[in-house]
Image 1 (cartoon, helix red, strand yellow):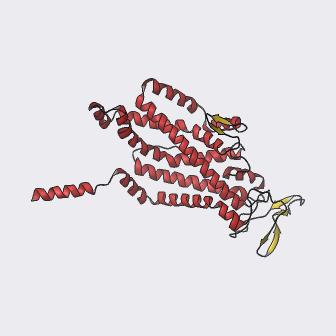
Image 2: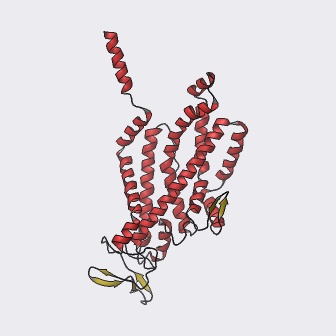
Image 3: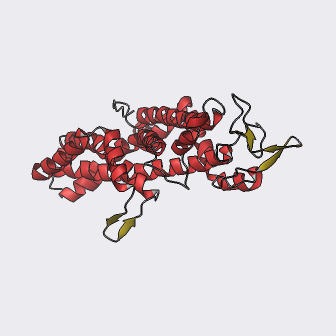
Length: 342
């Protein structure tokens, strides 16, 4: 009877044991800072996706059309979008300042008479799209190269490692700027795929490539360490096929390391895209991103600083939230890791 009770208790404890993913989720939920950061990112993403609704139903403006002679009613008073300057000799025009009302020109206008708040939401949508798509390209290529290099070794490892070393030798921003300058005025043709100049896929492709070595090398090192692990050695000893070991022993352990990289690569991609767009070699007109809006507000820093400050704050908040979330994900999935990309 005692043996039966002990067996039942063992079965219950085995059934109630947490799996690794459930354990990681429980740890992540307990991290309040990470959950708050995730909530901030969800709000930013939702607001950016609602950009067309805001522009049409709230602002009532076209954020991509110039409005040099436009007028708007603010608190019952008709005002010009570009008001005559009252500074110095009174020459030129000053964009309408923020109204701080949930309506037209809540954050004021830029030097083309466009609604800054509406452009901020549209710019956020493009910035998040570019960062996310580039992260998928980067992590996909890096995971493939890291696994192939570490698992097969030999000549394959040597060849792939040298290619990654060549990319590693270039400073990231210098490489991204060089590629952007060369490709910004011409199309890219890869087999049946053609990326036209001015397309959002151009910065996505460039940003997705430049960070591959910084993810592939740690993954390669992780695979090399897994190849020396006891469970892999045991699988080889019982005659398991290489593909079986790759799919069932190596890949599941690599996936957690890749997930840890996701928020950090997103933050890096967002900063890189903003930098390229600020230099006019990223997102091209008529599209907008947070980087292009900062460039638009560069000449208004003294008269209407909110034009440049609003997208700058959006970038800072997003990158900070991604780094906090990344720390939480790392602690939950890979607590022994010391990965720091940013």
